[in-house]
Length: 371
Image (cartoon, rainbow, N blue to C red; front, top):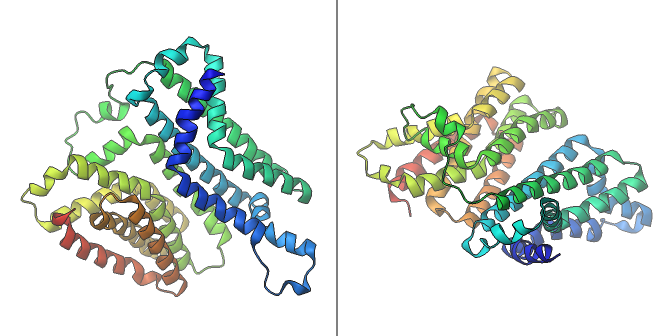
């Protein structure tokens, strides 16, 4: 179909071109692990055992419900990324012709073309799913691989419906959301405005993130039940904080683009820091409630401090690197590695205090000197 070819050239090629580096690293690493990992001193094991070692990554995922759920979340994040890319590209002026050319076809034909487009974008995921089905069939694990396949097809079909709906609706003037209508009479301040913007513009990302941080502790607590409770709560708090990276980045970008005038206010540095603290605390309310549900008061106290201080740390990094996502991601991975390392060496009780002190020092030096 002509529409399918057009969508392929505009969206599929464009998506792979923009995200080529990330996809190559992610799936290249997985393929390398699957087929080229070497077993130390392999002269004492058989070929069948070597194959089993190479397939251990896939077997672990398709045999563990917890890891299977995490893998599904990874795919959902990938699908969300592709949906955000395509929905944004649809409204580019160069692609406005889709609003009248695509509409000459029936909706079923449009959905079919968009479905093929989404499946082509998800091709690396589909290859992995098909490989996991083959491995699962050989080793007797059928359910999770089939669920993976069903999720890929279902999400792709759902995205195709959304794309068709976008193309069949002309560009309309802005219409207030329910959140804006409910809060119309509120007295809004610098604490609440960035959060309302998240509800207004990043509702899907916000919802998925909060769902992840509520479900994730269930798997971590069961999997790492032999850990010291304080260390376990600290580890869960670190994962929760890092899971909010995208939301923290969006808050910073909104403040930088639309609330930068606040830097000219005659506000004490301590009060500005308090506004930062309150914004992050309100953002993390679901995580705070989840932590209290799983841990006693002592563990909860240390985990709460780590959760808030690490989230503030992530935001303070943006004062240094600005909107440079590449540098920000490198900093996140380094911070995650160091946090886990400190927890492993028994520094959970001091980690939150150390992060909080560093955050305040960075804030004090960089807040009014943002690049």
